[in-house]
Length: 155
Image 1 (cartoon, rainbow, N blue to C red):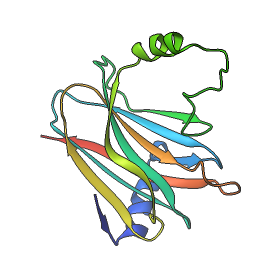
Image 2 (image 1 turned 90 degrees about the horizontal axis):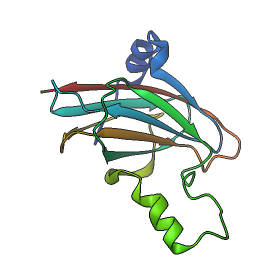
Image 3 (image 1 turned 90 degrees about the vertical axis):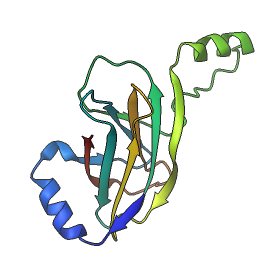
């Protein structure tokens, strides 16, 4: 990942496409799902926020998704899959997890000072699947964050 200083210009350009500005509520994690595209071989991303930092990480889900549309999913925290089920056995947990696609961490989730600079990155497709761009605001008790982002692919 790298940063670049033209944050004001970047946010002005992104504001023109309402779908590229998302609000990550306090205590929430927003996941942007970006399927690989048959005409691409690299994914690029850029993002910035207003006034405050946000956690950001990238994962790759090994699944053959026929859908090529980018989608946005909101959850209450990064632990949304680990529901507190006290009476579940190890066998039931294994069966539940065996149905999930394999997930690789590409960029670990860390808080990024993306209110000061535009953060950007790229990754060469490891195969067919779906990239998960996670914007993590689970640590914030009071503040929602506006995230300006752009994703695209190249050969």
